[in-house]
Every structure is written in structure tokens, then in C-alpha cells.
Image 1: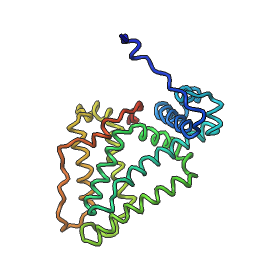
Image 2: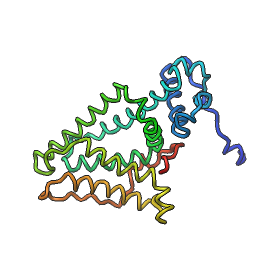
Image 3: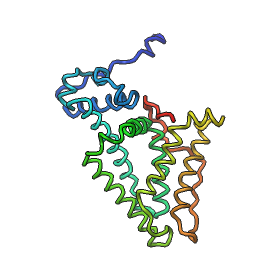
Image 4: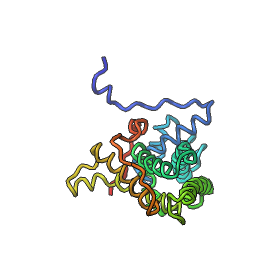
Length: 250
């Protein structure tokens, strides 16, 4: 029988297979993502990342060079994951209103299930985007995403559901801001206003609110509203994911 001390003792990561370079690179990225999300760029330690990944520092440097290069790789991978997940939404296959609503709900669900993503963004903003500003990979993937969203908005305008001239970036920033601010600052907001913003029913209500706000802004005055309220919780797949990092506190 395992005692409590043994069951709670941190487990050393299994050493990666040295004959599997892709697996080793992936293990390093996963370990670095956790370390940078928890401690920021300045507080993260290469020794800790190597230990988490089950390798030595020499191998880490061989794969990613220096600490800044590894940090950029982590940021690029983090953005690539959310952009890839968005591509799976198949927004072109739905009506414009349903597409926009799905994107709004998905974005909030993703932030909720992946708090390390918000932590990484907060760190890079402290550095004024110095590390990602030269990344052509990031510019390319975001141009594709804005193109997808732009097509949704254009279809809505053509059918008279959405106003003309909507900017895809404005719409996305609205969705992202409403979701990220709530989750990143819910602890301080809870303490200040005396309402637990982490309660499941409040989280679901805010998720619905984001959809309502975005659709209300995008619609024409005579567009028939699409019901967006829901009593269901965010996607179980997203809610059940466990991440060690907590979102930054405002």
C-alpha cells in the first residue's frame, strides 16, 4: 500500500528515447512551457526545464540553442496549438452567426482549459513582444486565421445578417479580451467585489455573455437574433484538461 507521502511525491519525468529526436524535442517543449508559464522568462531555469524533460542541459542546448530561442519556440508552439484547434472548428461549414458564436465560445473554453497560454502571453507582453516580433511563422499563421474569420464576416454581410465593413481583427480582439480579462483577473475581481467569479454558473454565464456581446455588435439592426444562452458548461474535453500553470492575476 502506498502511503500519502509517496503518493504526493513529484515523479521524475521518464527520460526520452534518444533514438526519437522528435519525441525529445517535444518533451523539451512541454517542460519548457510549464517552466516559462509558472516562472516567466526571467524566473525560468534551464536546469529545471532539463530535469522536467528528463534530459541533460547539453542536449537541451543542442536542440534549441539558448534560453531565448527555447522561449520563442514555446511561444510559437503555443500559438500553433490554438490556431490548429480553431481550424478544426470548420467555421465555413456553418451559418455566419453560428460560426461567430462557436468561435467566441471556443476561445473562452480554450483559455479556461489552457491557463498556461494566458500566462505565456502575459510574460511576452511584459517584454513588449520583443521575442515574437520577428517570427514569420507567427505572422503567417495569424494571417490565415484572420482570413478565415474575415470570410465568415463577409458571408454575414452578403446575407444581410452582419453589418458591412466589420474588421476581423476587431472582432477577434473583442472575443479574446472578454475571455482573457475575466479568467486572468477573476481572483482579484472576486476579492474586490465579493462575488466568486470562478463558480461554474458564473463561468458559464460569462461564456454566454461573450457570444451575446459579439453577435450584438456584428448584427444589422433588423437581423433576427440567434439564441445564444446556454445552461451547459464549457466543452467537457476542455474543462477536464489539467494544467499546472495558473493564469496571471491582475
